Length: 252
Figure 1 (tube, helix red, strand yellow):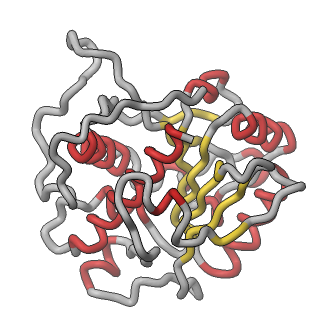
Figure 2 (cartoon, helix red, strand yellow):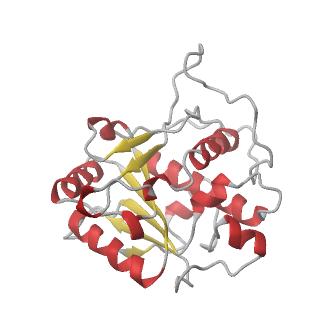
C-alpha cells in the first residue's frame, strides 16, 4: 500500500499563502501526470448506523485547501479534489492516508467496521483523527479505539519522534482553534479541552500508524487559511503538522 515518494523540494514556503487560487492544478480530465498522493476523508455513521454530518465538518473546503497547500509546500503531485470514502468501501485500501474528523462526537463503529479499520492499519494504512475535545468526547473516542485496537494502548507522541521532523522541524504541539475562537483571539479550547496533545497508536514494530489531534482543530485552520482575520500562526502551524503527517505516512 505504501510507497516512498520522491519529493522535489526546490523551494519550500514556511507558511501557506493567503489567497485561494482560482484555477486548481491537476483537475480530472486534463493531460496531467497521475497524482502521487490522494487525500481520503472517512465517511462514518453514528449510533444505530445513522449517517450524520459530523464526518463532513469543514468539508470539502478544508480538504481542497489543504491539498493545494501540500502541493505548493512540497511539490508532491496531489489530487486537489475532495475524496470521501466509507469504511466498508473496497477502495479504502487504495489510500495510504485517511483523515477522520470529530470522532469524539459522531463516531460509532460496528464490530465489522472496527475489523475493517484494523485490517486497513495492519496492511500499512495511516489514520489521522482530528477535532475532538474534552473528557466526554474522549470517552466515546477511546471506546471506539478499543474496538479497533483491543491489544494496543494510546500513547502521547514525544516531540523527538520522527513525525515532528518528517519535513518540518516542529518543537511543540499547539492548540489550533476554530474560526470563531481564532478571530476573537481566544479562548481556543472547547468544553474542558484545555490541553492539546498529539497522541498515537504504535504497532508491534513501533511504527506509528494512528495519530490523534486531541483538543485541537487542524481542519478548521485548513478551511479558513485565507480568511483575513484568522491568525496565520494557526493556519501555518496546521499546514506544517499536516504535511509532516503525510510525509511520515508515505515513507514509513
